[in-house]
Length: 305
Image (tube, rainbow, N blue to C red; front, side, top):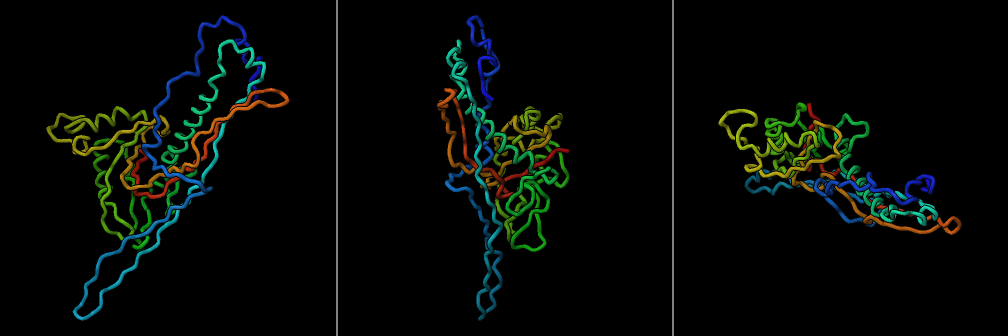
C-alpha cells in the first residue's frame, strides 16, 4: 500500500488545530525481564542439556570405588527469524505535507518492531500449556508448563512446574507454588535449590498481586496470621504485562537460567530510500532474533482455575 495525497487529504491544507492517534505512551520494555538474552550470529542456536552425577555408593573394604556416569541431556534449537515492517509515501505526499506528519515514520516503525518483540516473547507464556493450539515446547519436547516433565537419568520419574490442580492466583496458590519450586530436582532426581525471582501477571490481576505481595498478614481476613509469601519475607519482583492474553493465568520466573531465551542477531535496523522511477519514499524497519523455551525449571505457571 502506498500513502498518497488522496489518503491524507486533510494534511494538505493548513488549519488543523491538532492531530491525535499516533502519539500514545508506550509500556516500558518488559521482555528482557522474562527472557535471558544471548548474542547470536548464526541462523539457529543450540542449547544442550547435561546431567550431574547421582549419589555416591558404598565402597566395601578392599573393593574399588563405584563409578557413575554423566549423561547428555535434551537438546533445543532456537531458530532466528527476520521481522520487518515498511511504509511507502509518494513524493507528492511528502512534498505537500503541511504538518510534518511523516517525518516520524522511522520512529513509529521502530515502535512496531519493539511491540512485535514483546508479543513474540510473551506468547511463549500464553501458549505454554499443553492445551494450547501450538504449545511452547521445552528441550524435553513437552509444553513449557507440564505435569510430566522428563528426567534424563531417572527412569519413570517425572516432575511438574504447574499446580497439580489449576488454580487462580491467591495467597494459598502462591504458597503452594513456592513449595512446588522448592521440590524441584535435577535429572538425577536429586534436590536442587531454585528460587522464585519474578511473579508475572496480566493487567487484570495487578491489584490482586500487589495485595498478596504487600500484605503482611493473611490476605483478605482479620486473622492475626502472617502472610508467608509477602515480598518482605520472600523477596520477588512483580511484572505486570499487557501482552498476556489470559486474564487469570499467572507465572513465576525462577533464577534457573534459560527458561525462555532471546537470541539477538541484529538490533532494529532503520532504512529509507527513494524509488528511481516513482520518486516514492520507502521506509523500513527490520529485526533479526529468535525466541523459545529451553529449561522448564526456569518457570512455574498456572492457567487459572
